[in-house]
Image 1 (cartoon, rainbow, N blue to C red):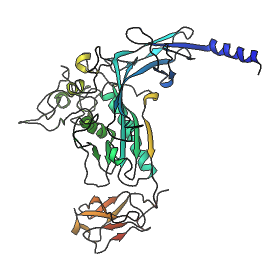
Image 2 (image 1 turned 90 degrees about the vertical axis):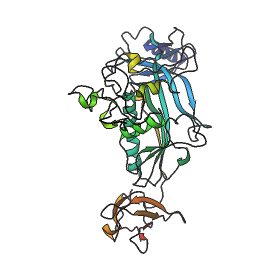
Image 3 (image 1 turned 60 degrees about the vertical axis):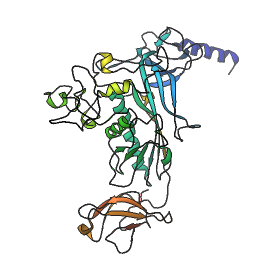
Image 4 (image 1 turned 30 degrees about the vertical axis):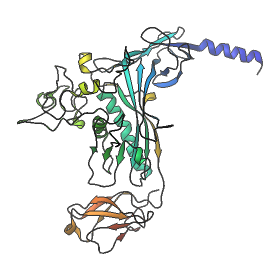
Length: 426
């Protein structure tokens, strides 16, 4: 290719390219802002706040700029201690009806300007999760998919202001000491948070966690528990005094409409996450009812949490609540593709991993509700419990291998896991 041909090709490319300018709310160009075209990241602006790319009329644009990074106090969150959350300004506007407004290219021949605003805040979370047992790729994929759905639920729950940005997911207890969320193999474990409001920083010398049972929890439960650990919220379903105690009365008394269970504006996820789309506020249309362990509306707690910018004047980002908006937003559209979680799955392969199977103790119901241990074939001198037998003396076993031994009160000798009870995963 001759020099003239290269020059003509460059001129043709420039003729087809469009300049995107990103500015802050003072009108100042913003460098190193991420620009998204039709939901996917296209690049970052230069020091003059510009990015030149090929655009088509009708393309949708938005930008975001990182304003702050919360440093992780646990390991395995990146170089050093890494980060646990990032706060952004964006040009995306969430309307009161739940719709999301970006910028549409009307004329690609002119500069497209995107305006960042501290009122368009976005918080990205960085979570590490660890599964105690050996897990198959299918099991880890199922958990991964739950986190993707959990990010969508969180995004709608917080009116487009929080999502899961990055996740490390490991099995065999990898990353166990630095995980915010741990999946146990013991079937007696129920979803539980060890200390509320400790996601961003340690409590004394402890590292509070969310504990999950061996079966994959639904995505809403993951976010309910994060409401405890991350936002410092208490449960709404445990009330004081006589009579029903609900965080928002409308969910139980309204006849149809958006505030009913499962409705687009039903609250609160800290009461019953599977039937709630929002967090409670003081909005007159569906106000916090009171009388629960969560004193005051959940949004009041979040608004005055460390997730809001309280160190700069003016604030670099401002969380909006239904009270500051003057409305409870409706159901939001899905998260743009470029803002979905970046997930790394670490599946350590041991030997002859069994698909989950039901083990029935030879003594049956006579030993119901007693503990079951596993003596693994790959660890020496370290038994671990997988929970309790049900009323029939049976248990669904996860994470076992050919050659492992099952120890129960009804067995005079440990029961080896054999090919007759185990289907080895691929």
